[in-house]
Image 1 (cartoon, rainbow over the protein chains, first blue to last red):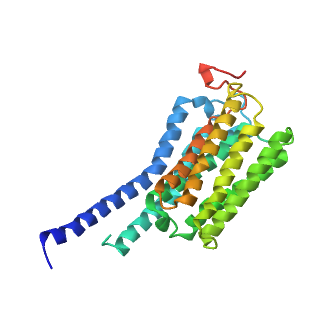
Image 2 (image 1 turned 180 degrees about the vertical axis):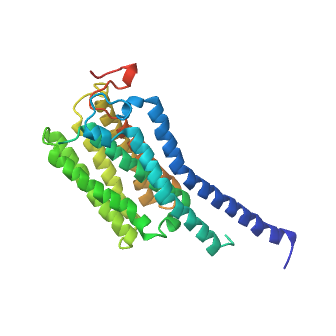
Image 3 (image 1 turned 180 degrees about the horizontal axis):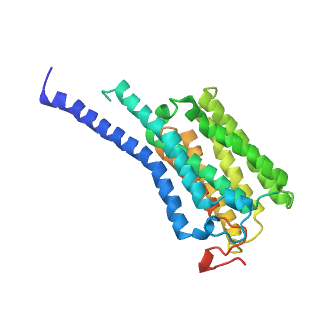
Length: 100
Length: 190
């Protein structure tokens, strides 16, 4: 059986799935940079939380654990270690199951 | 040389933030895609277990206060149990949704420990304020894994669980050993 209604619904579903998958890829790619920007904004707002900029009485641990830089580091690790593989796997899922 | 408490809390905040990002990513892509690579599947429970070892180390150095020693030992213990159960879940050894009750208990016990071991009022200092705030956040957040155990398919529980770690990171990053609650705006503290 063939009709416009019967054929157009799956196409619409497929289009929505592709849009949803693209949104997911975009969201995963955005997590790391958003975190990095958060750390940078914090560093600008409170430069005294970074011992490299404000060396008043800083010990070795103050150089090791500087909160805004820790946030940037977490964002970098996520963006370069975790996110690329996730995006790749989302694309593999798409190619494995193109009808979805 | 032992680091100051705030330094240890900032490191814990960074770990919590990383865990939060991992869990948010899992919510976005779905568990099936997230666990396609074994290292990624094991990352969350492994970090929790390693963090519990770190908490044991902190426990060893928390000799200045019996309450702090007991609280850190309790957090280390529940983190170890929750991490081990999560490892077994990822491995496929445990499959029932009821195992989400373990992280729920871990969050509840951690929250209560925060509340009990802080002996000052909310507005005494920033540290006291954050201890109360984190304690209540964890107590309320215990509802998310509890909901996951009862209704495992609803994404709201996993989202809430993930955002709990981000909120925990924000609160821990705000910690200072000695500071008024709202910095230059004052209110409480020395």
